[in-house]
Length: 232
Ligand SMILES: *Cc1c(COP(=O)(O)O)cnc(C)c1O
Image 1 (cartoon, rainbow, N blue to C red):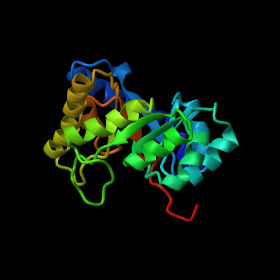
Image 2: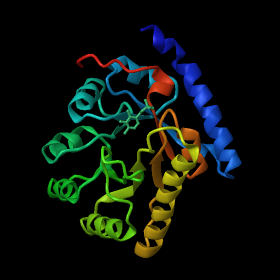
Image 3: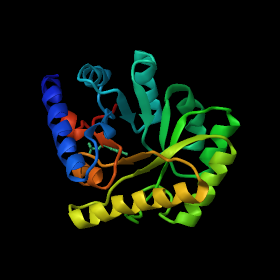
Image 4: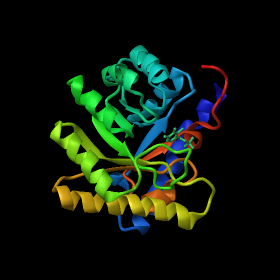
């Protein structure tokens, strides 16, 4: 696995870019964490990322991620489920993952609570309005009621996740990220809670996300090169 030789250098250059963006926004570089997204890759990619100092690992499928997590033991890293989570997968998800970062339906919230599980959760918001994207609409009243319900059920809601708009119009990308930060700010005030986590930014747009307040960037290709789309 020759591509793994570059991971260390890729982590360092990503950290450098994060620091530049953070500083130019008047933020501290250490307030931004890298999540390594290892979907489609074998378990060695996770161990390599951890060797390079990464503690947060993202997988978008519950079954594939769960298999790797059980292989390594779930104390090995902080494991995040970042893909669509179906109701029937909740049982396995709360057993294997520490964080469920892409909650997009109230019924999933109800199911987590019903199982008396307490993962850290993020609500996914569709800031771009693209129909192919998952997530709640970026509507403060709607999100207030969803969040209110999750808090009533005593779930540990830590903040929000979004996937930036397709294409590479930096103005539009920044607007989407800024929109989610503003929504978070107003919900903190309305509900008198802290929602510290904004999971925003992927390989192609993470610097812009950091400029707009991202606390966690989700990097796949930037660290590991292109993904294999073979059956896995
Ligand atoms: C695959 C994936 C990523 C990582 O994407 P890259 O473009 O490879 O950095 C981040 N977030 C989510 C939700 C993903 O599914």
